[in-house]
Image (cartoon, rainbow, N blue to C red):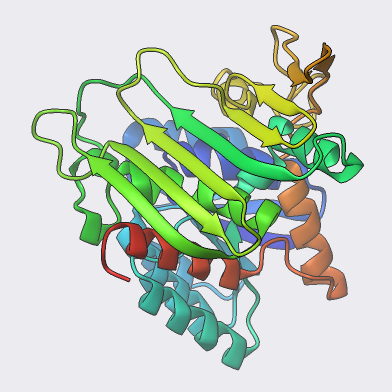
Length: 338
């Protein structure tokens, strides 16, 4: 079975993440790309003979699409997903699944009632440093974990005209809506549900429509505290992960390389894809010694491999969309809306 895929949106999400991954998984084919931007239309030629369409309406007018990938602005996610569900077409939604937990919850219920597969692209579950951390936690070498620190920071001090910079929080704008779904999802995956949320949200760039500097402290039901930083105005970054256990501390630096590698023209099946070019390692520190921990390769392609299994054999979806709903509930609590 070939899973004929339409990608709605060909900015960073469609061009850098989804299209290369879909093309790399043999059970999928890129059949259509929706973009009206001339530069993006030219970039879409890499996936010929995929049709380049000007509007999502052109996708929903067809009867030869098996999967719709929605990677357009955040406030279009749920409306477009509802159209796919009505057509009986499986759906992948870029995070966040919607602009509110109520909208997302209703969408998940609608897909379940219709029997339409719906999942969310929480690709950071397959970052190399996160995969490495999960394997290390499974060994018990850290002991009982007390604190999980996670930071995703950039140096982008100037606002742009991109929708992410001009959208209000109600439209899904702001760094908490952009990066929060990733960092919260990782924390929930590692340490389970959250019983308390503290947040500090700031607008550092003049004229910012939404937060561009965010801090969350999450208290998990098991007592672990997750401290999450998201920042667009950080000249120098914190460690990506710092995990304090009763026996040892795990520390890693730098962002997963897959996004930058894809922007540079490398593809998921290329040798070395997903491994940092500088050969960096993580570090495991105890009172007695330190040792390097080799980083596993990042493997966002694993999302589409699992999705292929789900759509062809009935295996579980790669991400339960209810996880994404819970993430939105915590973002709303951080904004004082929960």
